[in-house]
Length: 372
Ligand code: SF4
Ligand code: SF4
Image 1 (cartoon, rainbow, N blue to C red):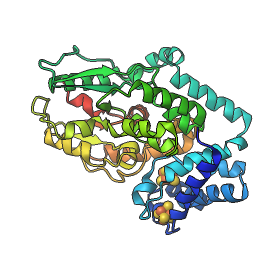
Image 2 (spheres, protein in one colour):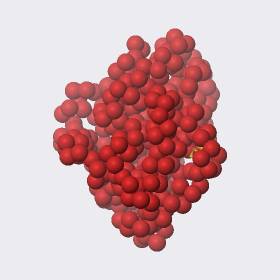
Image 3 (cartoon, rainbow, N blue to C red):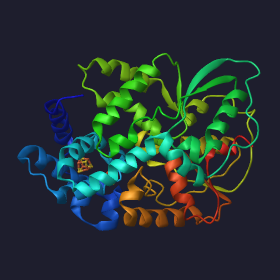
Image 4 (tube, rainbow, N blue to C red):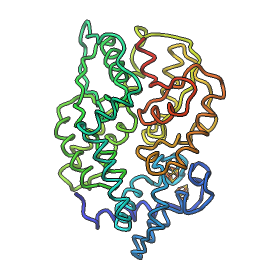
């Protein structure tokens, strides 16, 4: 675990990059909805700066940080390269002491529920979105092996996603090993400011996945977390180099498929609308990649207005900020359904479950389309 001094140094370095231009305000969903500077990236940077400099932390500041979706649209827009998400993690940990006890208890409960298979599986099974369709195939001739991040909630809520990934990779000649459900990437803990628990999971995963040559993620929320593992350690930390190696060999399934011959996969011209998760377009900087692959396979994803904006899922955001989350979902679904598509597809289990709750048409992971 890093010391608070090292964290403060890192936070100050990030803060110094901000030139207060305000370009990020135009693409921040919470600023668009609330119109309050303190609910914008620039305002939140100011709040974290004052907490660092004057120890001027308050419950009010904490609320503004809580309302942030960690969507990272501000990072995409920022001309100065401010690593806002890393700063936010420091700010949230610093302000956590201001949180009322009842909120701490609720957040602890949600964290444990989502990351403990024994607790989550019975509930997840009832809320199941889809079951695995068709048989699991094996590669005819193996040309490589990959480690698939199974995820903690995805295998229970939508097992057809990883089932589809395995079949697609088998058709391309890859053997797949799936990580067990208990190897959660740590994102749920980190985003609920339980940094110690997150680091415990991260270190265990780094050790467990050290031998893998390629790590594939089919949930962009997990993928961005693993790709960011190295940012959780100081460069002097013994885990830094190991974390960097894990991050460097992790790819979203779209990245992995981008340079492969996909002629063996199903082609279709179904009318679809694609929701690009923030964790893919802003976190992993892979905006446009899924759309390109889908177009190559004959699909025609509609142009979606405000495609850069978050759908309001944002991990556990929909649980703790239901009003804002629902507003964002309503806006997103209106734009996704404007072209009268037959189906909405996305690339992250959180967005999928969130959008499905208000959608008139089916919502699936785009990878499921390729395995029919
Ligand atoms: S991460 Fe998203 S919600 Fe948070 S400040 Fe940046 S743009 Fe706004
Ligand atoms: S766009 Fe970047 S530099 Fe400009 S105010 Fe926002 S965070 Fe600061």
